[in-house]
Length: 542
Image (tube, rainbow, N blue to C red; front, side, top):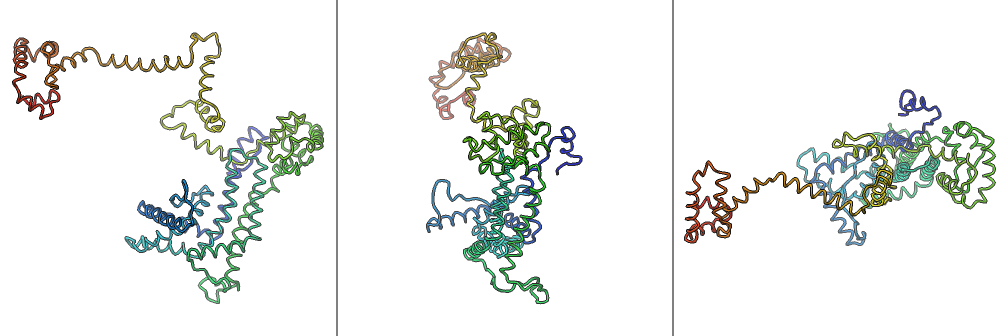
């Protein structure tokens, strides 16, 4: 993954020997928690059964509809009993969330949803057992229901919800767009402290929550003071004489937390990351409590010799800064290195080498989440309909997408006004002195309409229009109001000369027809009955 020998890291170091590789913290956390989930047998079986339960419930639209109906009934009962509060957007129905293979936080949300919808899920499985169409559905639902209502499953459900809630906070922080490496290491240390505190002092409260959960959902709990029996329960197979409570506390509760701590210590090893340890000497929290001149000089000497060539000047600046930062109010109550760098810029202090070193430490990456999001967005920007997009245009669009927080604060009309006012960049090249409103009205609004009219006039030519106008003289609507002998004769002469060779005979017939129109009441009656609209009705009557 690191590409240390023939991968991307090796290519970077070949071009720039002074570059430093920092493994993505979010990926490290993902690897650590994945190992912790697979190496404990009970946890591995729990996730397998969790996936199976979700797949069974969400397999068909009928089950999903039944699942939501049960949620609605339960919500109405809880509201009537005063257990739920009503409000806009509250008590919405939802589905069970599937756990992703690469996103550990999705497993936490999957567990969280199941805890919230535990009764609804149990009711759906019970209905499938009672009304299953075949033995396969009945058997799958029966196995999932037994697992769901077992004490081992409930114990792991609450334990992983507790531990993963702690790790999820770090996971979300590491995926933020701006995250400093020292702050990330502080978050890792804080997470380790929470897990250690849970292991040492959290068993009593956690055990009480498990018992309360089992009582609320009518799950049979074992006698915790009884002896734990391994294997098939034979006395010859029992190696240790321990109680059931001791088994759940030591073999599951402590084992899961210990394995997570071990993986976190091995993958986030501060002792082996000298760069991170030395960088922590610049941490401004608690009034520069970690400030250490020797560590900072060692950091510059080992990792940034070309950026800070004179260590004596750096040491002098650090000594002056150490003496003055307690008196400078601007440097009080700082929490991050980025805030420290901003104060250096705002106050324009003479500590240029310290400011440069702070900027270099800020460039150390913590997570590749932002980069991965940018690559994912590239598929949306450069799709199959815009596959011939140039690289420059793609780079501009990607910049706007990545820095969308800055772009959202820019008023679009101000950009349009500035762009139009600039033209090609020289006032001497502006030919017309017009307002922006005039430009959009004349050059765009009027131009588009004029072009459409021109195209319509060219495609619907005079000859076609004349044919339609002359044909309208045969329109029988409104008692032949449009009837015109001259137009009909002109129509026959211009467009149908071979079909009507004798125009005099046509004119005589038209005159007789016009004279007899008032007497042809039957014809008009039929026309009215048939709708009396158009030439087709006239042809039908004849």
